[in-house]
Image (cartoon, rainbow, N blue to C red; front, side):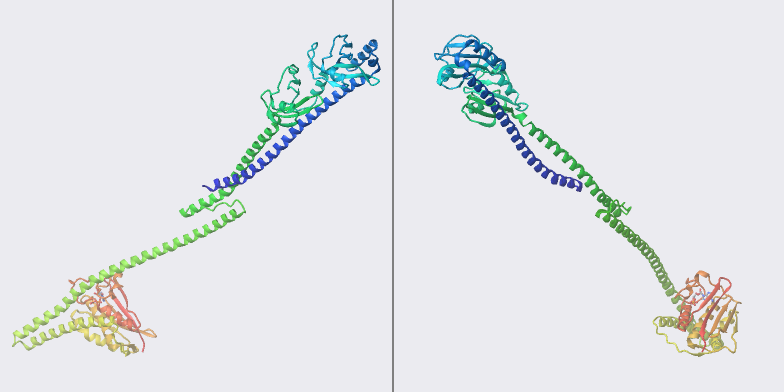
Length: 601
Ligand code: ADP
């Protein structure tokens, strides 16, 4: 579930549950209160109605009592009686329909309506004749077809009953009083007699014409019970009703109100509660939406930022608040920036390492190429060495064979051949010595005996070695070595090897008729020795390589000039062992200058 839905659900849960409980409790309380108040209204209405009936009936009974004891009635003066009752009827307009007096036999001896007859069998007569004031049950009058009743009271003269005074009393006045009592909007008042006949109702047409004795409230009240309850009335409506027995008149007073209307307040309250609850839920959902949006939006931005960071496309997230989330966003931005910075640094380092690696790779390839070249050079050297070693051997062999075959050879010729043999042996010896020197030097086994060496003398030894060849090639060798040149510190034998080599090369690579200058100069703390020739020279790009082992500018085995590419390597090794370097300056066609310096003795 997404965070937003969770927040909304959480808000709903924490608001709806208590809201429902509160709503239910207040609804229940209010329902009870409303029900109590409705019942109180009903009971009030019942009581008011009962009181009104009592008052009105009491007044009527009182009237009859007073009238029955009046002098006019006791004396039965008809003329006066008409006047007396006439004024009485006028005063109580419509209440008293007829006053009449009966003798003790029940015969009507006076009537305000001049009615005749006998009522000896009527209950009111019997009860009054027994000395009691009697109120009859209501009945429908024949003349007006409206309800009325008879109140009868004995007429006494000096304590003896002399007759009965009776009055037909219209109930219309009482009905009007009852009608004016407030019994609520939908309230209805019934009065029933002991038999369940309606004695009073708003609807006059029912009075004494409708019997509702099978109704619950009517049954209860005619059993002379009082109470209040919910039941279905005679119209089939659910009602809340209060019933009250009035024993004086043997009437049951019922006040009813329709349940729907009685509890309309409760219904309205329920609807109000539901409306308020729905509104509250809507408010909560809206609030939850707003809050969850406020909470989840920055988190979403953080999520997007983190994704961007992973993809390497990070833009700082705008900080919109100062709360924890705002702080978190700030920290995230900071961390992301640092991460990016570190990443950049790392990338730069990787790039540098890559460049370095490429460089190393190039060097390795180069070294590999060089190794390959070395390998080639070695093969070349082997064939060269074999060739160089073989050549003098062949010469030696041919010369020896010649000497062997011809015993009587000319002594001069013989000497010449022997010289050839010796020269070739020398050449071979030199070559083998070179190879031995180099391997000694490489193994670090070459020993140096440093002593004071006179350059001039040393150069002379070298000249003896190469003099013959120079003469043969018609190459002039000149020396430029001052007499006063100081001695140097060197191993003389090794120095001779170096000078032999340099001079040998100068001779080898200088065409016939060329020139070689060997010079030496005092430089203060050292002496510089130079070997200058007018030979073929060396191309600039090959200058560095001539000191490598087995390297020859024209390294093919077909070249005419002898040597195996070790001379300069040995010479530079020896000079390096003296703490110096052999320098070379050369240009193709313009000759070469090889020079080195040695410490003064
Ligand atoms: P090598 O036995 O071939 O002479 P070195 O080591 O003495 O071997 O010399 C290496 C190479 O340097 C020679 O083969 C040659 O090509 C070049 N070289 C040396 N000295 C000279 C020079 N004076 N003039 C021209 N080329 C020279």
